[in-house]
Length: 255
Ligand code: PEP
Image (tube, rainbow, N blue to C red; front, side, top):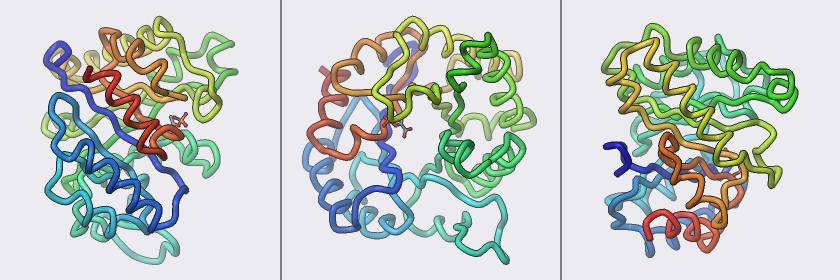
């Protein structure tokens, strides 16, 4: 426990693995961490895997997450997935605003705010991803970008709703690139995000909110990053696709 905040490590499988491969990966994680204590663990799997992976991890400490969700209840939205569709499948959390959704699929802060609200209305927890591009960081826009992303997604949420929000700070330039923010840069960003949450809500809400770091996290950098005061866990992409690599990260913080 860090400042009374539980460490939370989530794997984001993105658009990887067949259902068979995903089930095997989940079985490997269940074998090692089915009853893990001291760290919260989740896997965000492709929609097609939710039922089968859900069966594997049901009743274990590993939580099931979706990678995206449409903001509308139902209707003519071909190819989209609603809260109702996820509701019965054991999904506990939904990732919203991943940089790939923002930058490849053009999701705006406004759309992301609607999605956050829909996720919370449905009773799920939300992992809200935020983060700056390299250009934004280099042009001194870091704090402005993070503040706007946090405020647009969280302003107006009730005190009950904000309790079900986890923030993942993922600098866009560090995602899938092998580049990682230094512990100091990551900690500074997390501190700023926590301060922004405090300004919107209050210090007690800010002290409780979990802020994960994401961006090329691996077994060699996880322990150092997660030892920072305001870094409460990790959102892991590439390294969550192998039991061995993901275990290296988990073991580094529970050891
Ligand atoms: C991610 O998908 O959120 C991510 C951080 O990816 P990676 O760990 O591969 O950089």
